[in-house]
Amino acid sequence: MQSDQTIIIGNSTAININPSISTSEIRADIRVGEYSAIRLWGQILNMNQQPISNALVKLVKIIGSESCPEYLGIAHTTSDCEGFYQFDICSNENAWYKILVGKSNTGREIIIDDANEACPNLI
Image 1: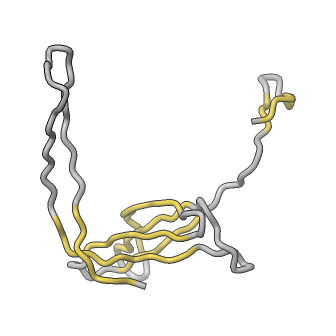
Image 2: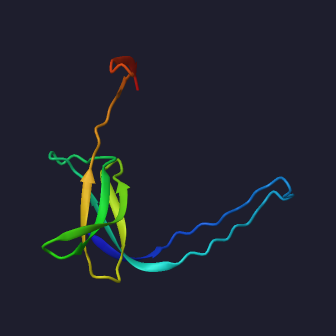
Image 3: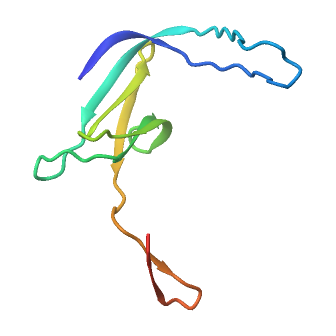
Protein backbone atom coordinates (compact mmCIF):
# COMPACT_ATOMS: atom_id res chain seq x y z
CA MET A 1 0.00 0.00 0.00
CA GLN A 2 1.35 3.41 -0.83
CA SER A 3 0.45 7.09 -1.04
CA ASP A 4 2.16 10.11 -2.65
CA GLN A 5 3.40 12.74 -0.24
CA THR A 6 6.09 15.32 0.40
CA ILE A 7 8.80 14.35 2.88
CA ILE A 8 11.00 16.74 4.87
CA ILE A 9 14.69 15.88 4.80
CA GLY A 10 16.17 15.93 8.31
CA ASN A 11 19.02 18.21 9.32
CA SER A 12 20.84 19.22 12.49
CA THR A 13 22.73 22.11 14.04
CA ALA A 14 25.48 22.22 16.67
CA ILE A 15 25.03 24.43 19.72
CA ASN A 16 27.85 25.27 22.11
CA ILE A 17 26.49 26.10 25.56
CA ASN A 18 29.08 27.48 27.97
CA PRO A 19 29.04 29.37 31.29
CA SER A 20 29.88 32.70 29.63
CA ILE A 21 26.42 32.85 27.99
CA SER A 22 24.32 35.22 30.07
CA THR A 23 20.91 34.46 28.59
CA SER A 24 18.24 31.93 29.48
CA GLU A 25 17.04 31.42 25.92
CA ILE A 26 18.84 30.42 22.70
CA ARG A 27 17.24 30.36 19.27
CA ALA A 28 18.41 27.57 16.91
CA ASP A 29 16.80 27.80 13.45
CA ILE A 30 17.22 24.75 11.19
CA ARG A 31 16.62 24.76 7.43
CA VAL A 32 15.33 21.55 5.88
CA GLY A 33 14.64 20.48 2.31
CA GLU A 34 11.68 18.62 0.87
CA TYR A 35 11.30 15.89 -1.72
CA SER A 36 8.49 13.91 -3.26
CA ALA A 37 8.15 10.43 -1.79
CA ILE A 38 6.04 7.31 -1.73
CA ARG A 39 5.19 5.86 1.67
CA LEU A 40 5.55 2.08 1.74
CA TRP A 41 3.98 0.46 4.79
CA GLY A 42 2.62 -2.84 6.00
CA GLN A 43 2.17 -5.17 8.93
CA ILE A 44 4.29 -8.12 10.08
CA LEU A 45 2.11 -11.10 11.07
CA ASN A 46 2.99 -14.61 12.23
CA MET A 47 1.52 -17.78 10.73
CA ASN A 48 -1.54 -17.40 13.00
CA GLN A 49 -2.17 -13.85 11.70
CA GLN A 50 -1.01 -12.31 15.01
CA PRO A 51 1.04 -9.07 14.82
CA ILE A 52 4.78 -9.31 15.50
CA SER A 53 6.13 -6.38 17.52
CA ASN A 54 9.79 -5.27 17.46
CA ALA A 55 10.61 -7.19 14.27
CA LEU A 56 13.63 -5.84 12.39
CA VAL A 57 12.48 -4.70 8.92
CA LYS A 58 15.10 -3.87 6.27
CA LEU A 59 14.49 -2.19 2.93
CA VAL A 60 17.01 -3.03 0.21
CA LYS A 61 17.20 -1.92 -3.41
CA ILE A 62 17.81 -4.65 -5.97
CA ILE A 63 20.68 -3.65 -8.28
CA GLY A 64 22.65 -5.58 -10.86
CA SER A 65 21.29 -8.03 -13.40
CA GLU A 66 18.24 -10.24 -13.01
CA SER A 67 20.41 -13.35 -13.17
CA CYS A 68 22.87 -12.05 -10.55
CA PRO A 69 21.10 -9.51 -8.32
CA GLU A 70 22.89 -7.50 -5.65
CA TYR A 71 21.23 -5.72 -2.76
CA LEU A 72 21.91 -2.18 -1.58
CA GLY A 73 20.72 -1.35 1.94
CA ILE A 74 18.38 1.67 1.94
CA ALA A 75 16.80 1.84 5.41
CA HIS A 76 15.74 -0.21 8.41
CA THR A 77 13.18 0.10 11.17
CA THR A 78 11.38 -2.02 13.75
CA SER A 79 7.70 -2.88 13.76
CA ASP A 80 5.51 -1.24 16.39
CA CYS A 81 3.41 -3.05 19.02
CA GLU A 82 0.79 -3.91 16.35
CA GLY A 83 3.40 -5.13 13.85
CA PHE A 84 3.22 -2.07 11.57
CA TYR A 85 6.23 -0.55 9.79
CA GLN A 86 6.78 2.17 7.18
CA PHE A 87 9.40 3.52 4.80
CA ASP A 88 9.45 6.71 2.70
CA ILE A 89 11.01 6.07 -0.73
CA CYS A 90 12.07 8.72 -3.28
CA SER A 91 9.48 8.65 -6.04
CA ASN A 92 11.76 10.02 -8.78
CA GLU A 93 13.36 6.71 -9.72
CA ASN A 94 12.22 3.42 -11.21
CA ALA A 95 13.66 0.65 -9.02
CA TRP A 96 12.92 -2.75 -7.51
CA TYR A 97 13.02 -3.15 -3.73
CA LYS A 98 12.94 -6.09 -1.35
CA ILE A 99 11.84 -6.11 2.30
CA LEU A 100 13.69 -8.43 4.70
CA VAL A 101 12.22 -9.26 8.12
CA GLY A 102 13.85 -10.86 11.14
CA LYS A 103 12.98 -11.34 14.79
CA SER A 104 15.28 -12.19 17.69
CA ASN A 105 14.28 -14.47 20.50
CA THR A 106 12.90 -12.60 23.47
CA GLY A 107 12.64 -13.36 27.14
CA ARG A 108 15.00 -13.80 30.04
CA GLU A 109 18.67 -14.46 29.42
CA ILE A 110 20.99 -16.74 31.36
CA ILE A 111 24.44 -15.36 32.24
CA ILE A 112 27.32 -17.77 31.62
CA ASP A 113 30.44 -17.16 33.71
CA ASP A 114 34.08 -17.67 32.64
CA ALA A 115 33.99 -21.32 33.64
CA ASN A 116 31.06 -21.88 31.26
CA GLU A 117 28.73 -22.62 34.16
CA ALA A 118 25.28 -21.13 34.28
CA CYS A 119 25.03 -18.41 36.93
CA PRO A 120 21.93 -18.22 39.07
CA ASN A 121 21.54 -14.53 38.13
CA LEU A 122 19.05 -14.09 35.34
CA ILE A 123 18.64 -10.84 33.44
